[in-house]
Amino acid sequence: MIDGHPVTFWHLIVEGDRKATYGELGRVLRDLHALTAPEGLVLPSFAPFDKQQLRLDRAMIPDDDKVFLRKRWRELQDKYAELKFETPKGPVHGDAHVQNLMVNDQGRVILIDFEAFCYDHPEWDLMVTAVEHHSLGWQTGEQYADFVAAYGRDLYDWPGYETLRGIQEFGMTTWLMQNVQEDEETAAEYRRRIAGLRNDDAPRDWRPW
Image (tube, rainbow, N blue to C red; front, top):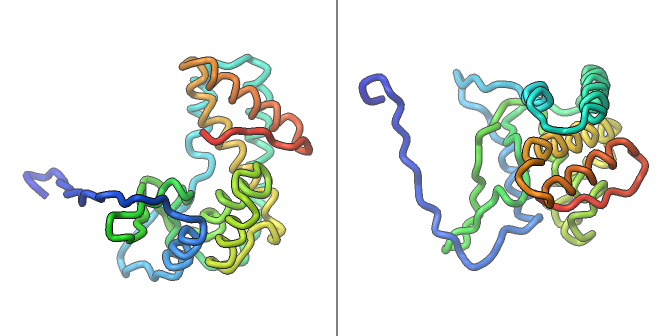
């Protein structure tokens, strides 16, 4: 603290010549979730709906989309209220995907982007990759198998998966929704995603963004 102001020092990560794997993501999350929070450290709970109201208020999208999304938002909140987790709470990254891993020039895998770090159930970290695979098909079967083997659990087998899938897909859509005016490519992807939310049983043709 300098004159009452917090000052932070950042460590430069010199990237190596490869990207992190899904197996490495599984191992990093397994180790993270096994940590014990230091006594006296108070972290917030995971907040899956904290930004949705503001996003919907500001979104430049058709009115019927807003009506649908607000209705879906309320439905997901009701389902979330009934969700029963089977695991104890612990450290949770809050945005756990493979793009938030870096491999430095010594081959060390480093977890980054702790903006949403919290103290909650580990399922919140597993839902990202589980939804990307089972719903969106963004990983190969081998990649996802490596993730599951390294972590030791496939969230798809948990009864609460569908609720978390709905929350994850809603968040992915409303996040992109904020940028529909940037270019036609973004607007087209938003239209793909909102169409998918309107038909839960249809295959997803969403693109990584």
